[in-house]
Length: 265
Length: 261
Image 1 (cartoon, rainbow over the protein chains, first blue to last red):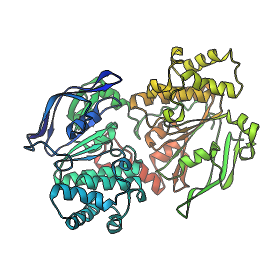
Image 2 (image 1 turned 180 degrees about the vertical axis):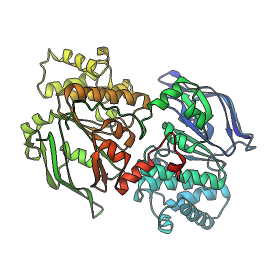
Image 3 (image 1 turned 90 degrees about the vertical axis):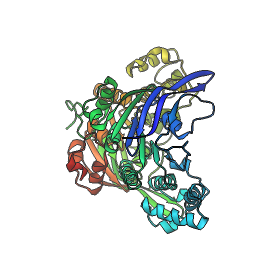
Image 4 (image 1 turned 120 degrees about the vertical axis):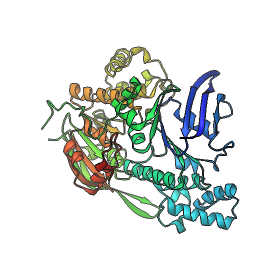
């Protein structure tokens, strides 16, 4: 188990209305090469800040202490080449006036040194890999012509176009309905396995994380509450907060909250 | 008579020269004090039905009876008066309210507009409403954008119950909340239902939540009713293709090997 990245004493502070707000406090964790690691937490837990810090996408106004060592990479990672990032809202991450083919080809051309025609051929292959219907015509389509789930497939194709070692999915399925969410999760699982990528899956949904990840890190108020194998987190959490999150999950087997007494037949 | 009876409701949109059937010949009823859930994938028509029932949009065909009135025939003052009995809570209260308004202002509006309380009475009514939804009365002067998401959704519920409605449309009302807050808001809604006999039209994509809080469920697919019945019976053993797909796709904390196959 070698670490792709080792995060040590990472503290990230944002300035807001003249006040310093700590979004992450003294985080230390290893991302193991080839693992599927989920980062879960509620609003304000710092989970997205962690994703941005790892990807080098923190706003310039943030103050960062601590370090991230990329021993498994041997170089400072470059976003797009070494790290693929999939955001929650594909409409915001795709360029609305650029064809889908060009958006994916541009990543391959920039980071792999391909010619445009090679890059377009690569884009077509990627659209097939993410199972977009009719990849030939999709190359020339614009994002608004696709459904939300199809747009997220395109965003994933662009994220993996340069063959990154690490794929970060930040609430990448949260805006999708349940059925499309399950399809995108299955797609991410397959692509990660096929390409031997490491996955960092950021989510508010502990059940979704449990379905996809081998390890789960629970964050709250900018701190790492608990980190463990998925089965340990789900079956034997050591922290009360993790138990609270598990208990708050309303699954298909949950006891009804409804008291049926006194209601109309 | 049912509290709400919807018959053969149909709504078409024209989009890019093509006709899209958003709601296709949908009929259902809701009894007093009952929760009926509408569930289905994106584009199945659940939010369109909510907007039709609220008369935010008009149907192409069909009838809506609410409290023994032809709801679609109402207009002007009669419609405004009847709307006091039919309220709504949306997914995102920050989008539904003026963010710079205070909590007191948001709650004052329905009391004033529907003539429920005089100017001098209203501060007491507002304090009582806040208490009813589990908020401190000293939250009243705070701006909507200053309070937490959970507090905002409680204010939205307080606003909805201010006019003593018999039916509240809950359109993904708990979907954007943190899970630790979601349970408290669901408890509040169920408590209000028990105390005030309010009926809910509960719109959600989350079958786990639907199963836990609803009496009956309608599963929608492409604007049509695919399946309906007792919420637990339908979700525990769905018969329709969309019902089976929705249940299979719901995330599970512990998936057995049989589930995964």
